[in-house]
Image 1 (cartoon, one colour):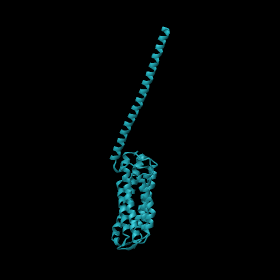
Image 2 (tube, helix red, strand yellow):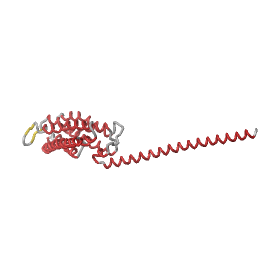
Image 3 (cartoon, rainbow, N blue to C red):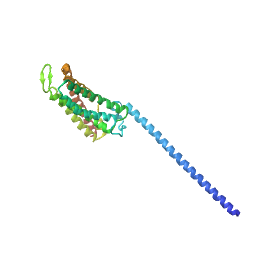
Image 4 (cartoon, rainbow, N blue to C red):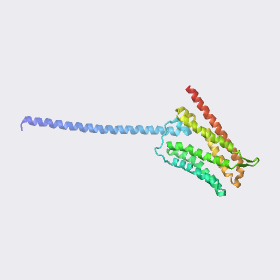
Length: 270
């Protein structure tokens, strides 16, 4: 082997070692860079999640107004949604037991309505605490409430209440029932229209404290009226009817408040 061949061989060997070393360094650098990017992404995601959690906890009852994009579960059948579906399924059972003319029929009707009112609070509580809210559940919850309330009001209208002083009065429950059901239909249409316009109109018709008081008095009044169908609880009829009229008044008042807020938003746009 000549000296020139030895020199050429050594030069080629050094070049090969350098090329392999450069490839290894580049490979290590790319892996390290990817790991660093993943770590930075995870850190940013944790910070964003913490910010969202803090906004959701501080938002209170109207947290959706402060956080316009709340985290929703991708699942359709979450636990709150199952409870809401149970309320919908309980409506025909409520109707069937209402016309059973015996003590257990009246007890079953009142118990079903109380259970529906309780699950109305429970599914919202679970959705907030466990973060199981979903778009389908948000749509179905008010539908279930309106079905239960409207069905109960119509059932009570089919059997006139016997007022202690005035005797049988056919319109005693009918008048507030028309006010309550009419308000719910109107508000459903208004909220549907507001959702198709812009965010400010949606905020104008968001649920407020007056609407929650209306719902609470409504549930208590209907529970008392259903229970007063039992002869041993007839003395509960006057306060039940009084609360029903209070609920009807709050329904009309809340509708007026919502309409005023909508008018203000529309006037500001002009």
